[in-house]
Length: 363
Image (cartoon, rainbow, N blue to C red; front, side):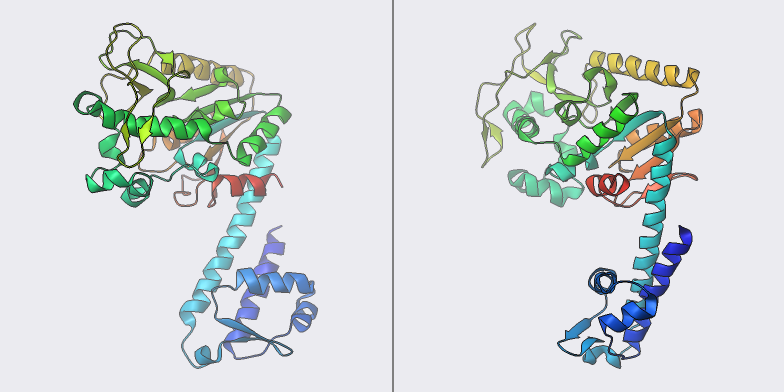
């Protein structure tokens, strides 16, 4: 397989060199020279050499834009080299991922915020992405880390529930992307021997049809409420709660949720920053299920494959868990992330978004 990708890389770099020499290239000539179809050459020009200023002259062929011919193009050439090295690296990583999943008898899916981007959920990476989703908070100078703080439920409950209520409404209406279905087909093939560990609070795995008792949500779930004052360790579903939001101010307009036990204000059962009131009874129960699943598979000498999707470095809970399981139980780790795809030795890194990577692995 490596030899095939060497051929592709050689072909692309050769064509790039021809352009830099000022040659006019025809699709038929290139197809004959490299023993590939004209369709393949067309794809090479359109996609793999898109960084070069190439023009098509009808009836003549392709040629480097004349105003660049006499200019130094080493930087563009280097970009082409890097793009195609990445292409080769990506193809090999996907092939390795396929082999690991073929051999695995147990699947651990670990997921961070990047898992939801392909479903159209907001990307809160950086202040700009957050403020794009919540413009009124930009005027107040508040970012995601400011808002994800339990103090707002005591200081400004309407603003707190405006933020979390809007997210709750959004997650309720969001349809999980096709990548969830691809994962379901994989675990069905593996006799349903799987578990999910996620830092996401959106409930998308449950919505996609994964089993409740095979999911651990380490940061809680926005679909459950608890008492602001933690009058009890109990949490309850908020499926019948509706939070009406003023989209101009992002303040809650409707009656705010109340604690079922003491009647005071309720809040989502979500772990926030500096959160000492988070009720972890539900998470602890999920953790027991998770540890039991790990133990059963280790005792039976099952080969565990970890598919990590969209877990960044800024809050590395999911990444750390994936790497711990890899080291402790000799599991294989496939890390899917368009930015933070690097990892320790033997990690299979795929620098793509979740849906694109899963589609390529299982195509």
